[in-house]
Length: 474
Ligand SMILES: [Zn+2]
Ligand SMILES: [Zn+2]
Ligand SMILES: [Zn+2]
Image (cartoon, rainbow, N blue to C red; front, side, top):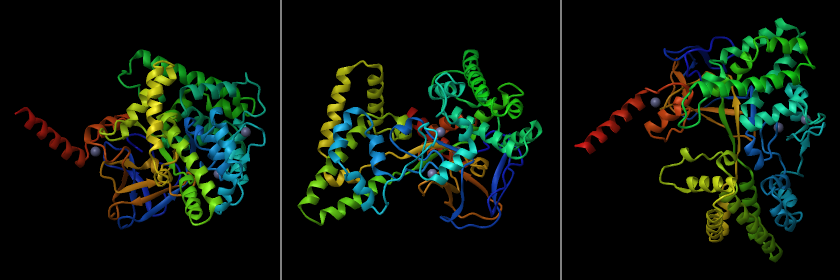
């Protein structure tokens, strides 16, 4: 997403039917169509260069550490969602039902592949595990390490401050592995760094956004610089024993390259969202059950109890970091997310116990009113993550885009689809923010990408808003 006029040529080749070239200033590079494409046509699919599940989302979705797809295991997905000890009786009462639901959905027996070194990473397949190990996990696995190892301290630091630090570690490990595979040495490493720099726009201190209401003052810069330098020092200490020469090249300018990589993620990453298979799976099972006998009725009742508990957990236990449903992306009329926020904050701070108890009871009562049909239609949490895609990173923003990005499969492979008729030579644009949002909201959110949108839609809506305001004043 070349929002800021920098970045450069080079990098991985454009997908078939597209080319990367300079866009109209003040935009930098953009992705352009070589041929015509009718509206609502699939254009290309793409694997991420780097991707990861958000750490908060790991509390509710068991996803593959390599491809971000849901692990094919109903028992494991339920264990993760109902991970707190207070739900143990609920899971125990289900017995082997989750395993049977898995098989009845034609998914075969549940299969979970774990990192052989015991770090806790999980994978959908041995192929994903091996690919992940070769790409970066060989240098980033904490399985065999002691608590005070710099890599563990780096991971704690990242969990405390920003997920993208973990993604930057993946980049560094990947570059070391690639450099070594190509014979190693500082020159090879520097060339690989250069390839990546075509996506980079600014160091982290420039690219990152301050918390709401906070200015980018000297104190803020000191804070972000400190955070980045500490992370870079820990990562360097963790990786250096494996590849002293290559690591030396990566950190030749101190934490400068590390900071550029973090800045690249700030501007270029897109949100990953993979839908849960759980709802569909249980719906089908419920349909099959309603046609048969008394034993089926008992199973249906157990499923209903489980779904009711899940609805309650969805309302009460998870914050927006976990579900990926953010308050400011929801229409203003819906007050529920704000309520939930307040509740989460009160819970975290351990105060306002009465407020929390009352809100939980309210949610309990709401859920008790739901019919089995409604429960079966209820949403299950998606996999939420972030990723860098080489072609999509080249696409500029438009509030009236001609392309949209989706994740239709059970993985981080994205699909781009035209949403307008596209002519040869047209620039391909996506909307970086919620397209339904009004002009003020869009502009506010786009500021995070470093620009004020002045597209034709923004200008038209802006003048309408202005006229309305003027009318009110008269
Ligand atoms: Zn996988
Ligand atoms: Zn591991
Ligand atoms: Zn706009």
